[in-house]
Length: 150
Image: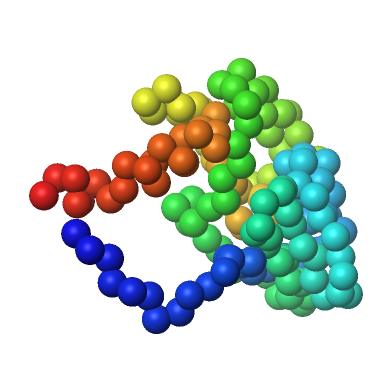
C-alpha cells in the first residue's frame, strides 16, 4: 500500500506538554525517582528530557489541579532488564508517600516484556518497561498489523 505524501514535512517532533501544580515537588519526583533530566528555562515551565530529539514541557497550573488522565495516556520509560523493572516496582511501592505517587499497578509480562504503570502526584501515568530501543525499531520495521493481515 502506497502512503500518501504528507502535507506537512516536519524535521522532528520537538516536544509535548503536560501540567503540574507544584514545580519543585514535580522536579524532585522526575529527577530523583524517574531519573529524568530537567531544566527550568522559564518561571512557569520546566523541560523534561532523556536523550534524543524529543522533550516534554511541564507547565505549572498554580491554583489548579492537573487534569486526570487514564493509564492508557502514559509515558514509557525503558530500563535495561526485567530485574530493573522489578526493582523499580519495589521502589515505587516503598517510596510512594515520599514522592506523592498516587497509584502503583502490579508488574505484568507480555511477550517477554516486563512492565508496570504508576500514577504520579500530577495524575500523569508512567510505564516502566524492559522494552528497549530494539523493540521499537523492530515494531516500526514490521509496519502496520492491519496492512500485514490484508
